[in-house]
Image 1 (tube, rainbow, N blue to C red):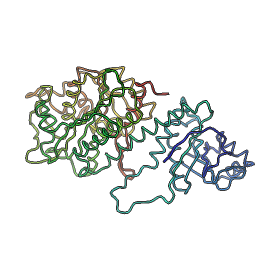
Image 2: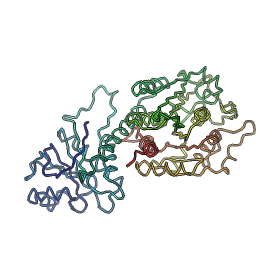
Image 3: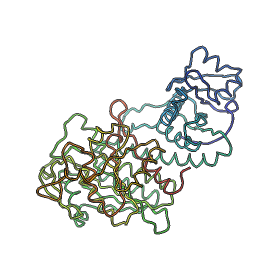
Image 4: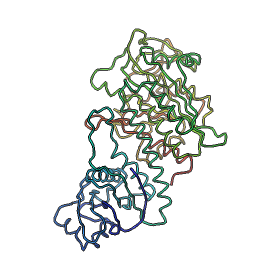
Length: 498
């Protein structure tokens, strides 16, 4: 889809469809009022008859509206004006774009980006509208023999801003939004792929393609190299699988100076059966999403490189498949991590931390400015925070605040959880330096505490995205989170967020 920005009055738009908003109850936005005046109150008469109340999610398509130059006018319900915030704005954009895509209109001009959102700039509205629009038309149907075809899909979308003086900032915001949406699409595509396609090797090949596209340094470490480095914790997870593990390392150097890199680490368990500690059968198919941490950091890198952000970014993906087998790790096994610390594996289904700990140790060689790991790590985080917020843990309060602010800006929110030493007691082992689980109580916290033992050399944060990386049920699929959060964080670090 092609996007553009303009400033102008709705009745003067030569477009297949002009989109304006209606608040509840029956209150016209400014753009809708301008159309109504040009149409000799045609809109207000229709609304007065009860055809459109303005309820959130409702739409009304009008043809041949007098006094206008467009073919159609789409009215989109925005709900109550006092309650119109970030979430409601994005939902309105998605509703408008989905409806446009079904009308047969090749292009649309959206005046919803003129509609005020509390404490949000015009640039923010354009950036978020660009992301929401591409989310609305996203489809993952490459494995269907008969694809659902849109008869005349939407090809061009124009966002309107209030004043001409805002056009430059809006153009930059549009470019940022498109880059974020492209990163989210990569993240979703990887997450939605089945485990028999998206293997560690496939992730490595995706990284190589990404590196070639954006001229990024890429290195793939194989099993032998990982063994030489002492990554026996990571390798233990892959022992039961026929799929070879990979450690993927990508280095984007947008800052030509010797600035220390920001390092993003993504958990890449391409399928998690639980290993010998086998998961129950119901919904085990969703364990193909256990590599969404890896998918999100690759998507973030795609967005950052696409925008040519002036910073240095290193992405590390430990990738493996966790399967039961004759050579699989057993509960009670003890392995030595790259850091030299020993780990008693009490539960082979707590494998994400076993691959991440070696990746975190490996990250130290880059002398990082900051390290952020992203992982679908614990079901306990889903119990704690549901599917709304990702869990945030950090050994640095300033970094935690930056990530919280980025999440608020992106409407991809996180909630900070405790990382107190008191919880470390639960990881004690009588036979090794630590156990890989600390019992049911505070499971997400003790998982983060485990990881913290490998991050003492640098500033670090951990994002537990187990509840936010994908949706179940009728809307089943990867969400693309936390790509928006991570990219907004990088934009802020690069001084590019307006």
